Image (cartoon, rainbow, N blue to C red):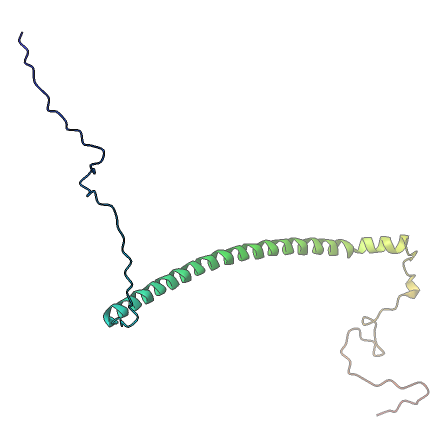
Length: 163
């Protein structure tokens, strides 16, 4: 077997003082030059100014539109919460009304009132001679429930006039 010796190319080493990457080896030198530009007047490009203001106005309109849409969305959410709060309040009030009606019915029970009157106040049922019926009694014509026109009753001590 035969081997051939191949020489690799030698890499050249650069000295440390030589710049890398193609940069010039110059040091940076800055000169101060006094320039007075106060007399110069810049020309205004009206076309560019109009374009800038148009873009600014369009940006403001887009921003306001986005603000309006978000405001409506937040308002809708807030109104939904208010509606739910009012519904809950209404349900509470309906339940309270139901409880008050039950309490009123229990307090207006005639048997309960009769028991309270007999036990706590010491009242008794009236005797039959103590009862005076109004409206059902027969008037002086003898008819029960007949219509009657209004009439003036004589005062005590006066003599009634005959028509």
